[in-house]
Structure formats: structure tokens, C-alpha cells
Length: 233
Ligand SMILES: C[S@@+](CC[C@H](N)C(=O)[O-])C[C@H]1O[C@@H](n2cnc3c(N)ncnc32)[C@H](O)[C@@H]1O
Image 1 (cartoon, rainbow, N blue to C red):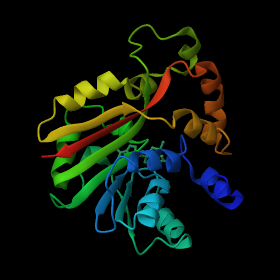
Image 2: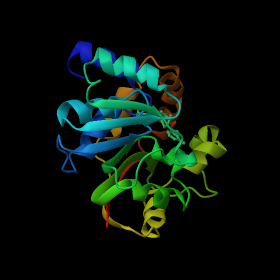
Image 3: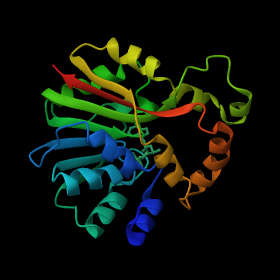
Image 4: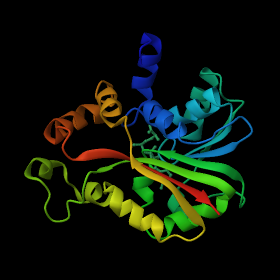
């Protein structure tokens, strides 16, 4: 973000709290190298894909529902990572088109909460990661469960979809603890929450402009970023 040209690219490509910053912190907790094949699930416009391919030299399957593989391929070509990346369209709720044990790492930034909030999702993803590999997730969350007591300032923003997807660390920990075939390695609040949100709010993206009001109301009281890392056993 300190380089003007990079900042313009990042702002134009973000789809939420600065994915490059969040991916950087999540990746720093893992042992990633150039021999790995990684599934970047819910990659959006591919900022996390860029980090994994360029900084770590890994091969990355950039899988997303809303952003077309053609758009991502063009972007990956323009930034010189098309030899390391495979853009692909997937809907995680409909099953993934990969072989069992194909990936060393399943990496997902600011996307898992949209589809991962059921008891079935994590068990459905585990087979795609080889034994000893990891599933690493970073998502926006809450410092505590609101339940029925949504704070007054948050009520205007608390749609059924937000209530379904934005949960506390304890809620996610309980969900993951029930899954077989993994060992939880590290569940924690991430350090980059404020910075990643502040950077997103500088983006010209209409959703960022919309989120400004919510973040002013929230004022650092309720939101966090949650990191979940589990090893496949
Ligand atoms: C807020 S965007 C974040 C994108 C990107 N990871 C980032 O941080 O910039 C959420 C992403 O989740 C993806 N997503 C939502 N539901 C999905 C599903 N069922 N399967 C795959 N991806 C999904 C969307 O396509 C979208 O790109």
C-alpha cells in the first residue's frame, strides 16, 4: 500500500477488508513453499492468489463463484502469474471438481463464512487436502455472539444474511471441533483487522462506500477477523 501503483491496483481489486493484507498474515502462520499446490477457495479477484503465486512460488487453483475465470485469467496474465495459476469457476456448496488428496493447502480469505457455516461443509472439503496438509481460513467475525441482542447501532446493518455469516470465534471453534479427520492447529483473532478494514474503506468500490457507515457505527467495538487453521490427519 506504500507504493502508489500497487495501492491503485489493490484498491481496484479488493472485495472486502484488504485481502492482500489478510492473506499475508494468514500465510505467515503456515509453511508455504514453491512445491505446493494450493486451492484458493473464494479467491474473488485473486489478491490472495497473487500473494501465494508471487511471494511463495506455489501453484494455485484460483476458484470462485462470483468472479469469472476469464476475468481472473486476464488479470493473472497482466500481472505475470498466469503460469502459476489456474482460474476456475466453482460453487463450494455443489461439490468441487478435484481429486481427493490433490492439494497441500486449502487457503481461503474473506469467503468461507458465505458457504462454510454448516456442519457438512468442512467434512466435504477435507478429502481434497492430502494428509498432513492444512485448511486455512480467514473471515470477518464478531467479538461475541449477538444472538437476539443485536446492539442498537448495528441493527440497521443486521440483515438475515449478515446474522448467518458473521459469527464469533467460539461459534466457529465449536463447528470445527465437531469435524472428524482434522486436528485444529490455531484459531485466533487476527492482528490486521483494523488496518485491513481501513484500507478497504479507501477503495472506490461501491460496497466499500456502503460499508463506511457500518464501520463508523461499529467503531471498533464488535468486529474482528478470525483465523482458523486445521491439519488434515
Ligand atoms: C467478499 S468476496 C472476497 C473475495 C476475495 N477472497 C477477497 O478477499 O478479495 C467473497 C467471495 O466469496 C466467494 N463465494 C461466495 N460463495 C461461494 C461459494 N459457494 N463457492 C465459492 N466461492 C464463493 C464469492 O465468489 C466472492 O468472490
